[in-house]
Image (cartoon, rainbow, N blue to C red; front, side, top):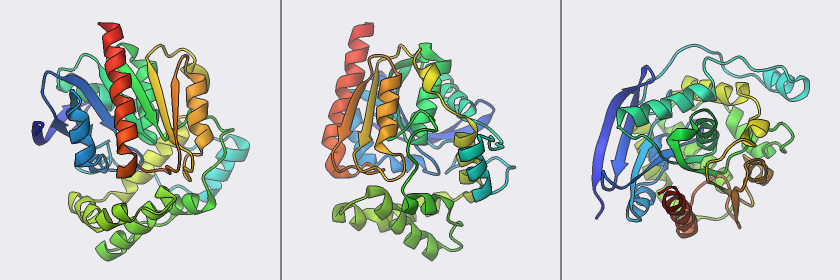
Length: 304
């Protein structure tokens, strides 16, 4: 069994960040950054344990405005009109904070934990945050893995109609409604038949609900993504060893988003996973964990 420390809260970048660690303290540090509106427990315990067993000190954490990390204030619910203005007129969305602030949260957490540099693995919005850390704090990143994410390039095809509608749906009003919505959401995001995942959705939903919801915070996170613009040109300067992982049937971040990320970062490796949507189902773990393991340990060996 790998060592597992219970959740702790530390002060980082002026806010409280709740994190949890798996593996030995002296192993290669690997930070898992979750996506929009997703708590750290969306990095499944088993996924974290398997990475820790490969010789990493795995740290997952709640981003600002989610789970047990600080909830901020301000900002209104995003309107379809704002999205249209952004898409067609390039009028930026107003935001309480941007992805750079979330990148500073990540670096602040590393500071609090005494981590000079580490491997960053980000999913969806987490991939965008990880990219921003690699751009703004390159000396802190040993390797970058960007999963089901994108560059912010406005030319990337939009989400499917179903996925976009899910993103813009009003928040559930009760626990029962939340649990139903949770199941519906992940069915759309997985984009296929995953009975072994669906069997676990009720327990996952209960756990997320018990840790606390923050619909206004999810809205602020979405604004942060939309207000941060494109990283495509800046990504040409990234020297960090980079791996890009994307599913071939992702309904939320089009597969072109992953291809664009890999094409924008010099010498990035691209792994397209056949039949994977915008989720990390257990059946894809062996391929994903192997790829992260090989990439991060390879980068560490090169730097040594």
